[in-house]
Length: 563
Ligand code: ARG
Image (cartoon, rainbow, N blue to C red; front, side, top):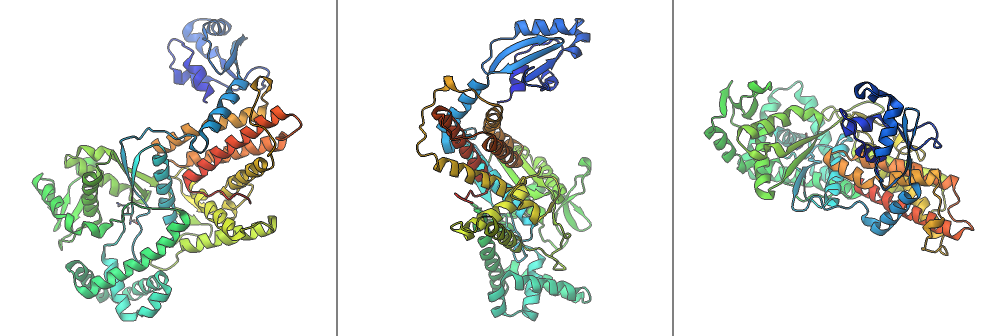
């Protein structure tokens, strides 16, 4: 519940909007004064009235509002006290009644959202940067589903381009099937890096590589077979990571899927007079919109990334009839998506306005950044493994007798990496630090997971505590009230995460809720002699667990029973 908003909504001051009034509301230095206060000095000038007069008028006109116990004017302030007992009762009852489905809504009924995420490149290693698009996309996927949308998850595979020609060249010259079968993507990467090293001094290699690529396109059996072989190796490796992260897709239609779907795009662009020649290439001029031209066909007639994206957008509209189509792609591609959306708009597609580039920032490891070509890659698999190992060693130290330690370490290690990627506003660049994401006392997955386990343990030890609560005998304290104010915001946080394409609302909620619960846990005896109070505090613990588990589940973090 947003009290500032609730208060502001019930106050009318000429010349000020509800938002402005809300922004003026303060939290007084002590609770004796009130929970919130509106200083009336700033209205004095425009209302031509003394502040204490304004406060007194406002207090007389303030209606009876559920959740607010009293309104008083003191000096130039209007002070509000909340009906904490009523509020806490309402939240606890609501969350416990909704249980696992707390915060679920039907906002999206009848609406379809396509989400293009992960969209990895075949035959290239998955480095830590791929974790962002994968986990942001997957979180949005779950969030929209929870809000009742029909969601289509699309892995727009990068399975087209001259790099496949290069790889065929490298494989034919230096490759060995047995080694590729054994080492998979690692070996393909080695070959790819080798190609680039040698091609630096031998420019004829690029021509040959291009010729191989052309052969894939024209259906040469040997080249197509090799291409499919590379694709299979890549997909089976990434599949292991998707399984670990619990990420799924409804479609793997990648770039090559559109090979035979670009003819109509070219025709439509031509018919609409949008396609012009420029230095031998065919482009859509975007000068008027302060953008470089969008290249549709290269001078050798080959299509480009953008061409396939136009075909893909049209295909998605036709196939799924989406209400929105999201692209979870790093901000380096800002220009590409601006161009793409503009071209669709110029093609008179009314749905061009429903396309959204969900951009996110760069990820680097503490030790520096990386590039595929030179082979300085930090593999996602290695990152996740290291998180697992670190988690396992922490568990071995803290709780060596825990059952199922390996499984728990996996949930904690992977969860830590995922949570770390989703903690900040997604547009920010992040420096990934193992120690930071795995800090059990930090703003991390392990901290929240530990809090769930703590709730579990309280609940399992409370067998003989009843369910009935006599609310008239409950006096809510500061910790309980604080816990409930946070608990009550989950539905709003889920909605904000969806409308702003920002899973960090939920990640931060999980941390705030965990902090509030832990403070409550340390300050208050949950199970005591007082049966009624124990029942109430146990319900509060259950409500916390429902909300916390749900929040972590939405962002893709698992919650072990015990830790
Ligand atoms: N494969 C691309 C890359 O790694 C991302 C593709 C994003 N999706 C799209 N429809 N363009 O850069």
